[in-house]
Length: 113
Image 1 (cartoon, rainbow, N blue to C red):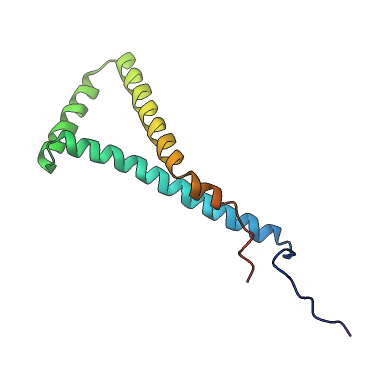
Image 2 (cartoon, rainbow, N blue to C red):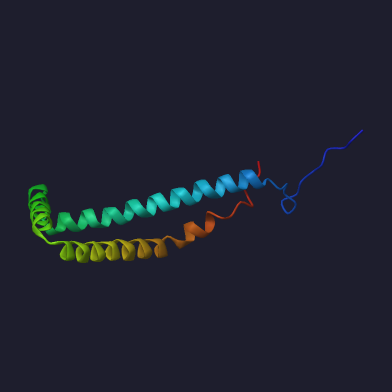
């Protein structure tokens, strides 16, 4: 006859596939939230640029679109590089301020139930 095994908090059973799934879902959620916050910053930028009105924001976006369509390839590539750099800097800054939640995404020690 076997006796039941009692697990203390320090000797938790190893559940590698479940732990990997948990960390993967948490990391995906962190990335999605950070990306949405980054795009939200740029949406707020365009709202501020338009004088806090939807009409003003749309006028600025229409102006940007018109200038984009008339620009040559070199200017478009330059603008793409600037826009990508701005989004990357925003993502890194928001990720830096959310680093505590990123670190806690890898902690699976208290999740045995």
